[in-house]
Image (tube, rainbow, N blue to C red; front, side, top):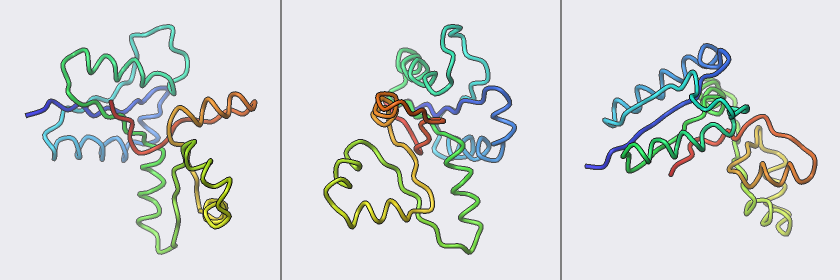
Length: 147
């Protein structure tokens, strides 16, 4: 049986704002017999942004003997829960650099993205691209990051 770790990051009262999501993450982990950790205080003093904190945490989980380490972000989960409880139809899209390359040449796809209720960044490539263009993103809020 493979050892699996699921973790969420809750810094600066984040875990209180998204408490229902954190509870959902924990229930999911328990249901699947995975270990769950809510990181409230990192040991890495040099890591300023929680957006980058998940990388050393994933590496620490792998070093600790886990076969799989999943990061689950609460912000996307919170939005999805709200929409699932609503009768409104919504389209949530996650975009990575490949999606943007496809959208550049496919007008129908770019139209879908432009009309989505919410478009969230997926992966470090989007952060790097935004930094290169002088933009900043709040966070990498895709459903999971795995290693």
